[in-house]
Image 1 (cartoon, rainbow over the protein chains, first blue to last red):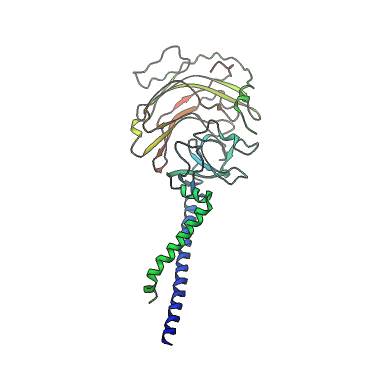
Image 2 (image 1 turned 135 degrees about the horizontal axis):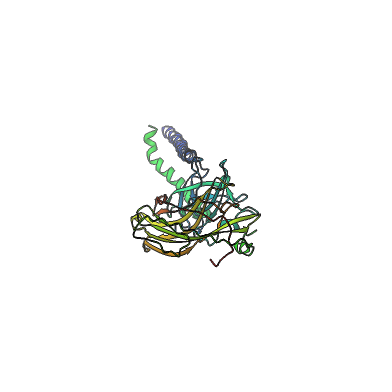
Length: 187
Length: 189
């Protein structure tokens, strides 16, 4: 009888440990999301960190580099800036440099871009009949960069098995890590 | 849907020939002086006292673009620059560009990059470029180049670090380049 009670205690304790670990994991995920949303607010950009996907800005940026963007309304778009923009109807953003701008008195601006490593400007990439980009197409302006780190994101996109492996290892790490501390937390 | 530049070139309209004698030479540094044969020369001395732009021969041409005729300007220039001080341990490359800024009836602000160059760390930091043509067509959005007395050229650069902030720096000094009042037939450019 005594031994059965003891087993029940252990089973109950393990369930609590499990719930505790799940809650902790949930807290880590929500904190990460909050940091991301906070960055969106501070920078004004819907995507404050992007990964360079093509070689059209070499030798400055290579595939896999990470760019930090801002998109504040107070910063006007000027030539020479590196902008990340989306073409209407396409979801993949492009990172190129502003080549020409024409701004009207009321602040409405139209501009043309070109990749450093491309021979011609981007008009061939724009939508049919579209000759200029406008503020609404801009995701952000590149203000800082870190090389290589974005390769992980590209790998996870291109090889889903790698993504699952990473998530699995992460989950395993969280559970294994907690179980060594948990007995003390609950006693 | 592709917008090839060579079809634009083939649609040039001949305009009026201009014989505009325009001698405008600013001596900012007594060591450099100009020969009489330059039609229009301006000397610019930029930030660290080591960058000079020498510009001459401008004309404006009417051009049929996607919908209407737009002015097309031609500028030839020299650039002498010493970029050694800008390179430090964290500079991977410099993206240099020459841009023209001006105002027109159509647009309060226009900026056009005329020429650019990538200077990598390890490349010769001293540039000595002569008789450079603009790398990109200097189109206006309309007809605002003709007679425009206030087109300002500046040399700027984007510092690309090994990692970190990407600053855009403008050289402190600009040349004002006045365009003639009439169009000119294309000379060989």
